[in-house]
Length: 240
Length: 307
Ligand SMILES: Nc1ncnc2c1ncn2[C@@H]1O[C@H](COP(=O)(O)OP(=O)(O)O)[C@@H](O)[C@H]1O
Ligand SMILES: [Mg+2]
Image 1: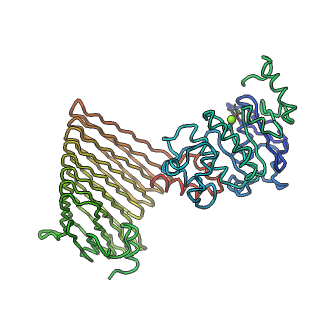
Image 2: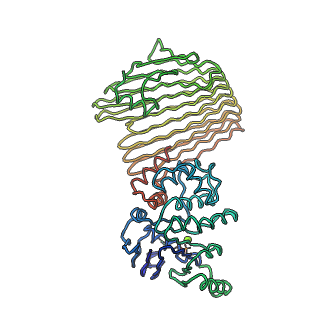
Image 3: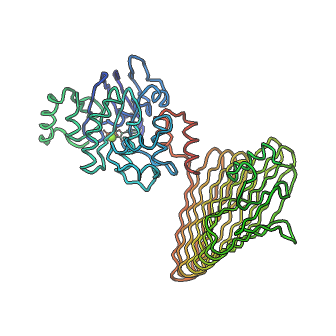
């Protein structure tokens, strides 16, 4: 279980403090599938980076299974079972897909297991194994390999940041299935940051993050109609 | 007989841990031959007028390899060797060279390998050369290789030249001359640490129409080490060349990269790219999110970059 308690993140930009995350409290129980959505620039990725420990909150606490992990490093959190698939995964010269998956898993992976992870994200596996995760891969391919690195791990909490970006429709439906099945098996709790209706449909709960705060939270049955209304309302949910 | 640490050295530089049971080889230890073997198609003979060997590969030889590693384990030795390779028409051969210096003393140990390759028509050569230094002494480990390659019509050569670590000072001098339709690929990978210095000069003369060359240089400089790269591609014909230098800089190291391209023919197409930068922060963070410490992450990134 993941608990965020009154989390804030302020940066000082141009001599003036800017609050990027404002007093966010959220609980993600075991077995929960939470979809986080909201306008661009709302603070979704920042929230994910705070949970992973890439950024340090200026106030508030992060608890994993009751333990305060706020002061722990990225490495320590990773070892406790926190995983984050980046919105923009970095590329590595000279690192093969197979090696990256093995590093993620924590030990060398047999070829067929690697292939399975890749197939699950819609990549025709064998030809990718020995390719380098460098500039030769497309944005969509990078995203899918990034997702596969989380599928290769047993996690307490897995966070995927806009996994649908740059992915074709066919691969996308493979991906939705993977989140529905594999992720549930390998990850105790899942947070997916997404704008895709088909991913929202998988959610137990939806959280809308706007202007650095939780603008709305509830079951998909509760949130969905409101979200659709907001989208149709020109004064409401606008790109920030 | 080879000592255990000498076998380890051989393994590091030439992927063999003892005198090979078969195939052509020449193992040079402390300025003398520690074993030599020719085959029907590959003949190795010592030079009469100076230290070194002539390696003759018969035309149309296929699927054979030659190992010619050098080890220097005596502190204070200054070893110069002249090796000439004559690769016959249509032959396909893999050459594994390399030099390992184990210096436990306080005098400098040095090896200068002067290699000249005459690669015949349509022959294909794969050349691997690894340089490595180790030992506790204060004496330097110095390697100054000179490599000259002549590629005949349609000949192809792939050269992989690696400086693994522990080489205090190196000055590398590489020249290649390409005839019609000849093809050359040079991959250079180099790591320096401590107060080491490295300089690499490469000149590729593309003389024949349809010739092509690619130089890929990747390096990592740590601590207070210094590196200079000076790759040059000269197009004298209808040819193509691509020079790429990519370096990771760390600590208080210094790197200069000066790729030069010259065209003396209007159908020459030559491109160069050069980049120097520190390890990307996102890469480090990414690996930490997989449970690695920042130190391990750094190591993994460097290993990949130099692989
Ligand atoms: N370290 C930082 N310094 C300054 N601004 C930041 C920092 N991190 C995020 N921001 C800003 O905070 C806002 C929220 O960004 P982000 O979390 O990426 O939004 P989202 O993922 O919802 O699109 C953006 O305006 C972004 O530029
Ligand atoms: Mg984002």
